[in-house]
Amino acid sequence: MSNYALFRSFPAMSDALPRAVLAELPTPVEKLDGLAADNVYVKRDDQTAPYYGGNKVRKLELLLGRAEADGVKTVITFGAAGSNHALATAICARRLGMDCVSMLVPQVNARSVRRNLLMGMKSGAELHHYGGRRGVALGLIRVQIKRRLRDGRAPMIIPPGGSSALGAAAFVNAAFELKEQADAGLLPQPDCIYAASGTMGTVVGLLLGVCAAGLPTRIVAVRVTSPPYTSPEKARKLFAETNALLCAADPAFPRVPFPEDRFELRDDFLGPGYAVYTPESVAAVQRARDCAGLRLEGTYTGKAFAALLADAASGAIRDRTALFWNTYNGRDLAPEVEGLDYRALPGAFHRYFEEPVQPLDT
Image (cartoon, rainbow, N blue to C red; front, side, top):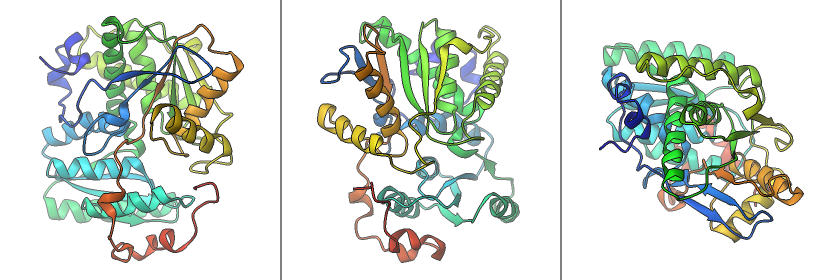
């Protein structure tokens, strides 16, 4: 039997949505003790795969599954210099015998940026660094032409974060997976799910999924990026596109209006901007490590967990079941990149190794 919960509920989708099996599903759920609230759980998507965890692997199962079905030889994706998504795409594409081109833009420096760049190089990604969106657009044209001539076919474009309708559909599946775990008694049905919102594929997929699966759950999307990557308008648009995709894949899938009362976009933990650690996110990372042995980081999951901790301390989730969706890769990459020489990277990336990291990255 398929370990893909969505396909068990809607069998016709297995033909319409080819899947490259990259994740070990379902990921565990665990109770978190030692917090101000008693009824807090964690969804361990840091354990999606033994070679690289995190939420990106779920999306890439469907995105690269489509690429495989279409005979694509090269995928191109985008992100900041230390992008977890770009790295996950490189690792997963290589496992499937595809090439990956990562088109990256500057970000605030951190040790994680260094690790991800070195791991991307080790995974065989072709890494490009651009000053901004105009450079990316021009570079994309050149890379597409080059790869089409080499491969004999066009490369597949994967958007930042993998957050297309197809990528978000993977988190509709994740919500159905969660419903099965609740039905099996592994946790109560959550009243709220806290998750980082970077490019919105995770939070929007979960929102559509809990509605379609009949869970009474509210999604608390903790903003870690600025518009256009995270915004109410994008959430509504991606929700409608994902719903339409799944209805086309299986007409039995319900058509769901956007549930305004079940989606909360939190702005109060972003701090100065994307990838900038905050005192709250750094404290949350330490609290997660000390209380639960979880590996978080200051850019995404630390900010989402900080929101949950603040609500627990204020009593906002008293008598409610809250679930923290851990979207970070739980595998330690440091041994993988030890001894690698950053000077083998394209020269534009050298500054991340030669300049100091941000002050809160301790």
